[in-house]
Image 1 (spheres, helix red, strand yellow):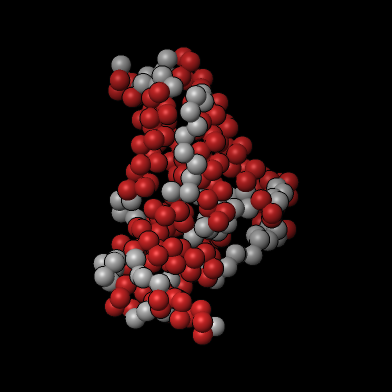
Image 2 (image 1 turned 45 degrees about the horizontal axis):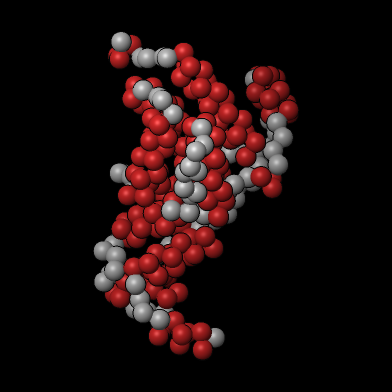
Length: 237
């Protein structure tokens, strides 16, 4: 341990090293555990040393987002738009498996970070290269929402609240009581039929992998149909 600490002290501090250490800390203990003091301790430096490379925690978080978004696979050349979009979105979702804190971090930003903007710009470019009009692409990006980055928000998702606190995964929802089931029979019917594979859950803030791909494919099939029909919005007519 003493040798490891000495090695850390001898390794030059840099912005990249700080960001990657912050990502590792958030991966291990959750985003709520991240502080400049804890990060400095992990890096074996005094907290003030960090501020030579990142101005504040907001800048640190922006940089962390850019580090993980850069892990998303680049566009595959000579691939049709539908397969290209689907592949990159599922690559983004795999990135979230490695960094389950990322969805809430991305949502917390008032403006997208440079890496997020570059990713979105590239996805828009894929639609445009596939022959989509600016009008249709505009509406497609609205319809995709956060799903284009590999996550979506489920109704009354308690796991997202757990993700905010960094205390771990939320307990699975309990079955409706007989009284609730009698009052809301359709909800009870769906709750009884639902089955989710715990092994396929990407992480806090995300829904089940099967449900995600199911909705993604519905969207892409609908988008493909509109594209073939030459759809335009009323505003563009």
